Image (cartoon, rainbow, N blue to C red; front, side):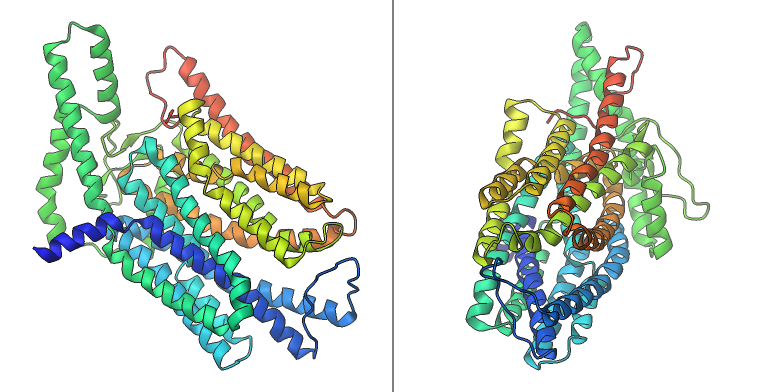
Length: 547
């Protein structure tokens, strides 16, 4: 009895945000340390000493400096490939698998990989092995999905336990946890290395990552919470229909209840769905299915290639002998049913999300070099302050969302569009920065840009059933990692090729790319607006929800 009470208290205390924050701290602490270590090892190989840039006006790069920088760039690109390529393939399988085995198991995989990666890196640094030993560290992190997969698993976990109308705000809070943890990690990394060298910070990161792995089993089971929420929906629908039978003289109430029936199904269909679930529960236990890679990939493709959202609880499992499902046009309380226009909307959201991430990541890739070089001439301390300021703004995102929703009454789509405009504005201002004040003005505009990512995720989550959340996020995770890889390569090459022409040219290109996701989301808004103005259209709007 005491153990059960303790477990309930721990489940109430331990939230997925804590695990994401610890993961963000480890990731943002580890990445700059790894780059610094590579730079020092390469410099030692050329009998050169590392020079901290304190006055870029007096800095004259020698042939040795250029040689070291070129070799470091090659090592960085090769290590990123070893990390991101396996991560992109693993992410789509792990995330889709979460629909079958639960989120806690699939969330443990990237955390375990990050722990093993930190241990491998710490050992190679302690014994002063060759830089080739870091290949193993990056491969261990990549083959387990890396941090991006952990973050997507956190979003899928929240999708299970959060009503669709509240998911946007909940995803913003999760990103805030990431920003706080990552910001602290980025700020302390430089001071920690200066005080104790490379081994101790990385060894402590491994310990901290292992502790977060131990916290995952203490999370509440998202599937049980989701079942409780759905049971409440069933009761509400049944109560509504019983009240309708006794008061059907009120036309307005009757129309409202009819609209609810079209969204969630009638009480008779719900009872049939419940009966289906109960009758087949034993057969599911007797015949446990082993899912292979083909099944997981097929589940992902079905979500992005069909207007029909399948619900395992209400519509039954897919027939594995003939690979077909019985289509139920009536929507169930779990989000299953037919969603006209879902295919193109899913792909529009997917491309908008990845173009936005392409721009955000691209700016981070060359931002440090941009700030240290002429005409800005930032010191390393000022670079750290700017980075901490940027991460600190993420913590204010929930307040911005509250103002958007409660005061300005903005829809999810309008919040996304506002954020994309802020991203473009920040990039344009940064491109013309010649003084530190302009840099911080451009950085402050990111306060309004941080909501695009979580709200696009919320839109995708809102048009798939509870049984398809993992499959929907699987492709999102896969393409996000590919965006990280292509953005890294593209902006590093673009910046080095155009810095001699104009130092802020890469920022202008990033701002121009934002037009693509803005146009995609605007197309969805216009189509939904036309549907709402059509008097003959009976289908309710699916995802332009005022939250």
